[in-house]
Length: 310
Image (cartoon, rainbow, N blue to C red; front, side, top):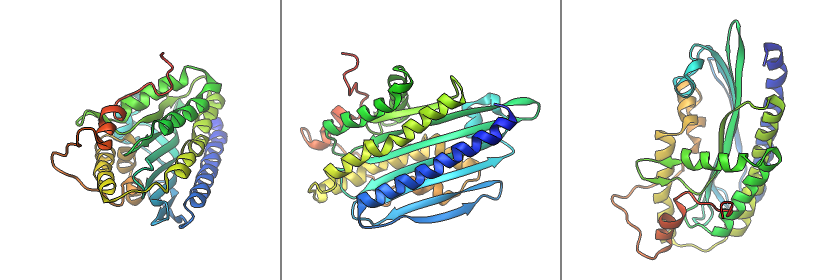
């Protein structure tokens, strides 16, 4: 990508991401039926800014955040150069949409999605660019049919670009959203990809768009099926306990959180992914044979949900 190409292609990506944020927010407001997103537009002193949108206290969603940002600066942050050390000393542009949804109902999963575009530049050499992103699902009381639907939509988003993408990005997601200190996955996975720049800009951008646009078809059917499932205080307390794993992952491992904080991003926007209520419990063990035990025994391990290897 030459500099003149960047001037054409970066606005294309930004326009798509802003439209994606709009579509997702509109769909989530409709699904919730009780609250609307509040937008907080912000500027970053070092360069760039964004639109943070948060819905709180809805009929379905306890908190949902859908953020768009475009930030740039003279030096790549340490979290980026640790991943790509050859980019140290380069300036950068980074734009993306990131969302996290924390529902009230413990039978409706928490979910996260992100699509992003990076450009790293240095005078006298060609810019380095790539796409990344994905989406993952974190249930507390899983339903296997929901997990299969989630992965079927993920596979359908990837298949037009080659049959190799879904199994590769699915495994990448299982590996990335893994809490090493707990020995368990954060949830039931989905897709995760990074460093996508082959076979060229047009194809890479199209795959990123397909994955970003697949989020609503993957998640909204689960909302309709599970939002009114009866639950009690026992299920609510387990949901709050398991939300602690979400906090642990985001603060210890998540590359996007580290990039945002190290690049001088807006702290409120970066940490909107945190659940509004959470609890920890020392030495918790689920009761043998319980629904909570099933989560650990069956769902917090990488699975071939679509039976592709049978």
